[in-house]
Length: 425
Ligand SMILES: [Zn+2]
Ligand SMILES: [Zn+2]
Image (cartoon, rainbow, N blue to C red; front, top):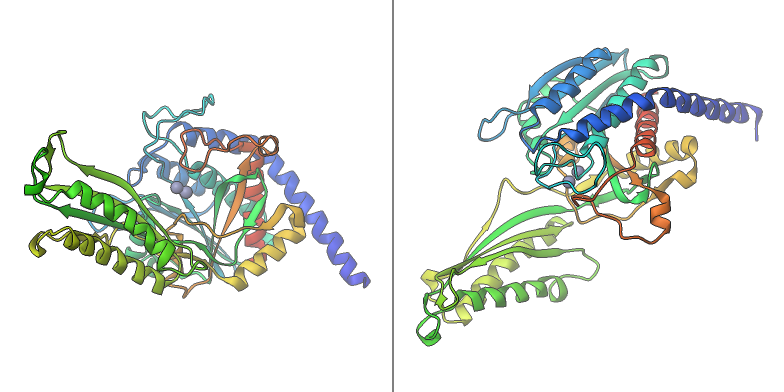
């Protein structure tokens, strides 16, 4: 090893250690911040107090903050936060946290459990906000180590995939600098706390919401011959929809068709007039997405027709325009650059490649259809001893999901700080 290279490695590892001690100093306050977010969760689109806390804290750290950024289609108040720190010439980096919680009654039993009935930070967006604030503080202290503009974004309404679009619609990139890169972090309910996961290319799937109204001809439950029973027809549709995955799609293309809600009928001896099915559909490739949605309509209508339901009572198949989001595509070059930098400073064992997921996110909207390279990293949130024990691990959105605060926040702040320093060095 050349001496200049050796000196570089010694310098970087010494620097990584000094970052560790800076984070250690901040950690007790950050854990308190996390618990304060966790105890007072707010649902999607209602993040008024949460966003005010994020804005106030970023202002106190020296950022120029604008709140109430975002425009929903129905013109409801929108609680997006944008915080800018300009530090000389250089690239613009967008770092995003989401802020909303879920309609889940908390069952973790932790002392800082939610005090808002039936609302819980069950997806860890409280971890993300805390990590963003910790990173913001580190960057404010490390101004000699980076050049450019940091643009921190507090995004509302991620769980209903409306917040990112609302912020872009509110002229985000005209009112504020257009970023050269956008990064984000999400906690992970199966990785050891503090470990970082990355996935180049497709990371999270397209998500579509489909409603099917199966219309029959109702009547007496004892006289099926004079009816067209929508419960039987809808049942056949539910089963046949699975053949889209198993018989119409390449086994190498991931697809999920889930009927999460099946509603019809009110009394055992009455054949109802109609049944409502609510579906979520997950895909990756655009052409697969288009074909799967078309197949759902074809199968629903075909089965109804085979059952003798007249054309004017054919199923109504609606694909939601608002409850949908595109796949999250991590720019491969950006992901490679970040994973190399993080491995160098956090150790290769602590930064690992992970598989794509069939959950969805609207973070990709900040990339404007791949015009701006984006990368979402994961941070493990689970006690390693619990993973080793083989115990069942509550998933994200579970009423029992409970990240281990200290190591998760430590890993998140370190990774996002190092990622920023790499991109703005
Ligand atoms: Zn979620
Ligand atoms: Zn989430």
